[in-house]
Figure (tube, rainbow, N blue to C red):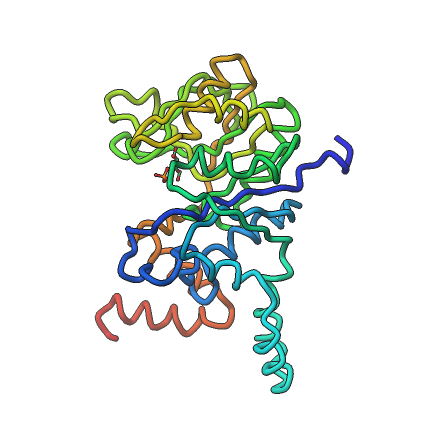
Length: 296
Ligand code: G1P
């Protein structure tokens, strides 16, 4: 594939209400909750930019204006840090505005993830693009989006990220029926169902928050009726495409991933990333060992 046709666009739905983290998210968008000292969404934008997806559209909603502020320049803060000669903080401050071109559109009404993605139609046009869900934080050392883009380039159609989960958890996710392709970690998806009861689930392969989508998904989304929860579901649109014979693959992720929308997982992400930070890790690890041993 020539450089020109390599996907460059990413869509990040961020219109959700964030009820799981109330009251913290009463006035602050959940996407800006810090994971150590970086807002969750900056990790997501960095992940997209890291694989060349530097044209990013965030789907927002009323009350989420602070997200746009975070990805904008902050001249007053920059001037203050420049004056102090604080180069490290200045670099950290500028990073979010320099990672990618970040654009915004509002969803207007909470009509589901499929509807949120449909809001990206005009931005995406006739190109393959990625969708990254903000609650799923993928460890940067464990590649996922790049293998997905590679599978899409090879087979066409759409590609979903999958993860094996315990059967009793499938009802939290979209779930797929799949068959092997001969390539380890890549499956052909034959059916998809949104949040099935464990006894109805076709497998324990759950969809996690990364998608590489063909632009034909927009027409399909327009034809997709509201499904589970009365919302337009991306899973249902993908099912329609699979049933119509469009190529549909899954990349099975076996790396580190945190659901920062879940309180316990959020805490684990903060602790793990803090332990691994060169500036904080050594002291924090020692404290953690003492704490767990009842010495702190
Ligand atoms: C959404 C999708 C679901 C997917 C999940 C991944 O659900 O509808 O198919 O498995 O994201 O995180 P949500 O988590 O928004 O309820």
